[in-house]
Length: 481
Image 1 (cartoon, one colour):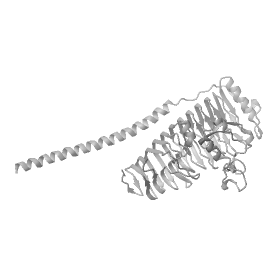
Image 2 (cartoon, rainbow, N blue to C red):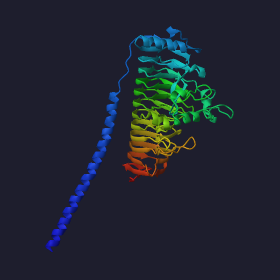
Image 3 (cartoon, rainbow, N blue to C red):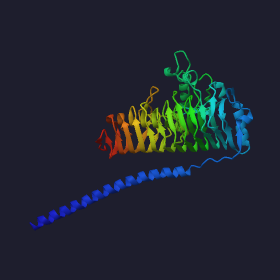
Image 4 (cartoon, rainbow, N blue to C red):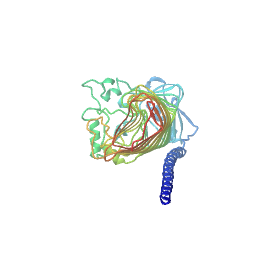
């Protein structure tokens, strides 16, 4: 009897000790998780502090002094060029665009130049392709010799576009947009477009075969629309306060560019492929206080398409989005689909996304032709009104241009959403699809509330999706290992 009591007491003691150990391990795991999350956001703060600010001489170069005419009809390309060159040769400063309407072709910036628009200044960009010389650029993630972006800088340092004036690409269904081949943008059978057999797919095929970029000469007769603003291999750049409308193609395109701030920019452009901002192969990019009302993704982080992305092999990383408003667009913040060199360390916080025409809030899209490692994506403090399809979509089977399969299985891991409120969640709260050999891994939704969604989730080959204090249609959701 006494022996039995001793055994029982030992069992109780063992059970208590085991329970304490279990609780201790659980608390330690939670503490480590919280610590990792905290350290990730601390890393964001470190990145922001590391981005150097642009600085310019106080000398002003007024484009009117170089022959510019503000009648909206006279082509001022040479006046812009002269003012920018004079500014650069003299050590830099501000190239001033006074109030009025100025028609121009391509504007090429130089180091230490701040292109500044007065409040009622409007730059009208010509829609004559001959006003855009052939330069080294990129088109949908593939490098090419093509029409110059409307505003272009290559290998420049300390450059800026500032002021509250307007940059008007003047694109519509009678000019640039019709090249897309989209029936909604004026295209009809028999009209040439980027989709013709000798155009887009030829460029992609050249990249797959390793044809040098200098030999990928497109331009006239190929119908590949120019980007609006492209900073190519630049360092220390700023775009602040300007309004951008009616873009031919992608709107803000930092490519192979480091240390750039995009602040207070308003974009309103609903043409084909009118992504708001596409950082590509770029690092330390801060996008804040902006409004995106676009015909495609509001922000789409890129790193090259297929073989060309693997050739360049520069991941986009340390991309920060703060205090922005996303209105229309295919996605609020998107990663991909041109993503072959990978993306990591993306931080999105304090944004508002709300439109019946916004398809998704956060999206990652890739496939086995693209490949890429996409990891460490942190999102917090979002207010989402309405999304059509889903709040979070992670897709390894993105397919929009015919067959998109290959031997480059992608990786998607470590995606965290915290403090998210959604009023109308669309079809799914989370839609995630991976491969059996490469599941979508380590997804966390913490303090997330989603209302009016048709289904809780759609999952295929997903490992470790954690729902912490998360409610969907007022029902608490359990984690899935």
